Length: 114
Length: 111
Image (tube, rainbow over all chains, first blue to last red):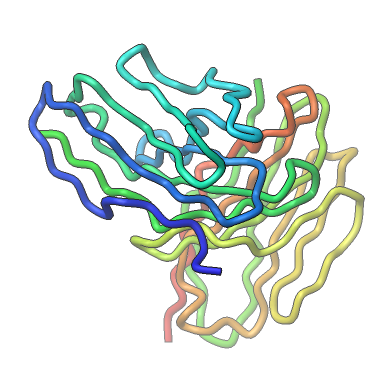
């Protein structure tokens, strides 16, 4: 398996623009997680899905952030409008179940908002 | 909420042993993970503990004491490639089994 795939790997945009991050989980994994990592706050869970349904979005910072999972092989995280404080590395991870199963992380998208 | 503490940075010599401690305060504990993250890369799974005791995997071992809210990751026979951040993450059953990560410990291995 190719592992978790994320695109783009790097994104530079200007404040106020819409940003869409994409993720393809490992085939057969039922859970998908979106994380954000910064030096100040470390690795934070934003939202996770089970079987394409959002289960917990309590980590989503504000209404500017939204996430969707239209099917088992694709998810998006959208920021509209983007702000400089959104600059971070955004990771997508997937796992087979949420029991003892390991979460496998994608390579991340490094977002810079100018 | 959950409080997870680990040292910010540690330095060790190639061939030596380093122990990275992680303490947590939470209710509904349902397992502890250690991840390794090289600079500019994604976290990768190292170990999982849910019961008290030591889990050994080659040069890496992880220990858990649930009563003390304490875990450590032991890295033996350090190699230069072990220079990375090591993240402790706690799973809470009441929180839907999602993971909460500590801030990470940056380990620098010197020749």
